[in-house]
Amino acid sequence: MLMPPTSLWWSTLKEPVDVRPALSTSLDVDVAIIGGGFTGLWTARELLRRDPALRVVVLEQSVCGFGASGRNGGWASALYPVSDDALVARYGLEAFHQQRLTLQNAVAGLGRTIDEEGIDAHFVQGGTLTFARSDVQASRLRRSVEDAHALGISAQDRRWMTADEVAERARVSELRGAMFSPHCARLHPGRLVRGLADAAERAGAVIFEDTQVTRITPGNASRRPCVSTVSGTVRAEVVVRATEGFTATLPGHRRDLAPIYSLMIATEPLPSSFWEAVGFHGYETFADDRHLVIYGQRTDDDRLAFGGRGAPYHFGSTVEPRFDLNDKVFSLLAATLRELFPDLGAATSFQWGGPLAMPRDQSPSVTLDTTTGLAAAGGYTGDGVVLSYVAAQALADLIVQPDTPTEFSTLPFVQRRSATWEIEPARWLGVNAGLALANWSDRVERRRHVESRASALLDRLFNTPPR
Image (cartoon, rainbow, N blue to C red; front, top):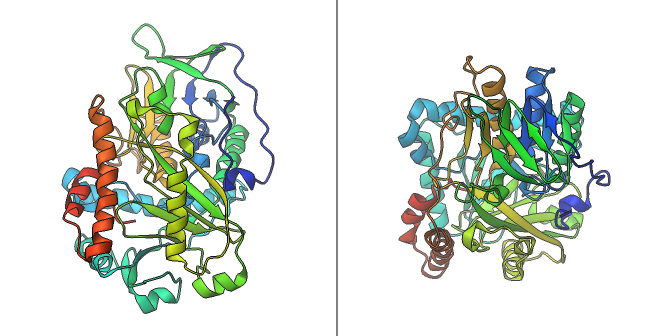
């Protein structure tokens, strides 16, 4: 059985990981969920909160949290992986604000739910700072804030801070200012996903770990959908696919979502003198406005946990454990962290990575097809900690009360499907060209001190919000 890569999160769990039994027989249930990450586990919990009589099983190929849920940067944010302007153009201003407010409220809602379940996930809602470390970045971030206010987003939700204002919270090198949003918390994702598995079991879900799903068979008028595994089959009224970055490994789903690798490092615990110098006393998460995404947090034991993109997409949407480690990317992350914090003296103590899922149009989705009995949620492109919590509630509403519209089931990304990715080699060329273009744009802006002409093209390609 594959186990998660050695990481800060898995090395600092509250309790050792005891593997749950694998499926060893065939079952007949109401809902079968494939994937024991945030989406699958939240969905199990939310289904049983709505109807405790449901028979719900979760099938996980390794252990709960094996995928992105146990490997991410620990940002519980209201970010959505499509720009504001693109969302307004696609769904209209009213739907945009409905979704934005739901996600913002869900950050605090997630914190309350974690407390209710007694999960020690180190949740602190300190907001997030997107630093401007050049005049180009400052100009772009100020423009982004102005555009947000023009759409009706208040200064309480997103605002520009001068360098002096930012320095009262946090300090990095070459600081020009920052965009601040209060709608983000840092947390320990490993503790959250393992605690969430226990919470789903307390609610009545049955979890099978070390259970490899080999096929999903849709239902029709004469039969229910079926999940085939190496050791038994599970028939259900509804089958939920919650496999995120590993979706491409399932037969028939190779082009649904592109597995994009994001890698992380973590330092040794840093002394109080370091934190007195750089701040982050509110445990703000942080990034800067470069095109190649980076993200960081101050952990509960005073480390810097820091990650970023840059690892290549692998031909054919291939997912293999060896791709979790990339020495070149780890070296670049360490160099970037020292660029941000020149006085950082601690060595890197952990490095790890894994795949996240990117849809062709970068927009997540939640779907339920009552004809086939198949449901799915995912495609978060790295913003899944809160989105999975919201998606699970939407999915539970669709399954339990399909004829009653709710706050969650009427969100714009619910009951919509992204187009499939192009066949290879177009997919490989396109995704890796986008990564190369982001890297090239950052180099141009550093050398020439002007905004890269490729910046607008990147926005059109990836529709990414400011980070």
